Image 1 (tube, rainbow, N blue to C red):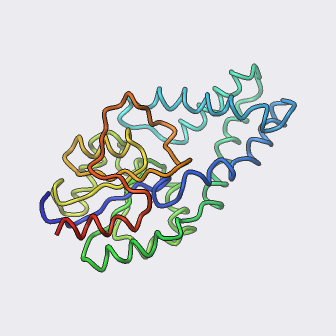
Image 2: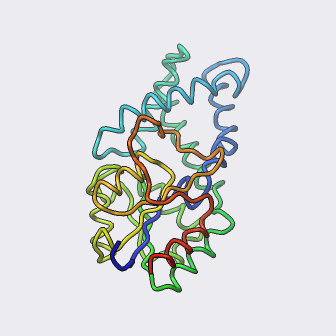
Length: 244
């Protein structure tokens, strides 16, 4: 690797844990069961929601760009279909907006996140967030998570018109950081979106892997081996120091 100049970060599952998401979304699923007239609350639709999410995500994965609003709305429609409920499409929009509101309001950074970002900045590194997310999701999350002051730049898939693992969003991040692929590290939790995407354009990749926090898209059939595997964010500092 060349002299390290920048570290790129995924957001969900990386700077905050994916383990927060199911708990935060429980009230939304409970309300969805009521709106769909399904007895049994979350327990009655939880598995159907997981299967609908996987079904839609797999179909969107081959697209180089899409709005996540469309992905979430299509997931809601797939959920209705799986449960045999032909209710108004207003449900799909409500489901997206409810999930978005919960994610913005409830997510919290890993307790060692800001300390790690500070340590990397002290070493002269440029820190850039690269997230598969729409702008109306990312901007309020940056505010609620208090991240703006701790990052040098950020780019959404909507702004890039490219969704990881598509190469364009990674190349735009490199251009904004003013560095070559070998002068950066990409840190993420998804072997498909983050590791496979970064390595395809020559950026060394770090997988953050925690028990119960695996990306919902990860699959052993994908050949996406990271250059490093960490369990906690502070381990990044050691990787950076060892590279110098």
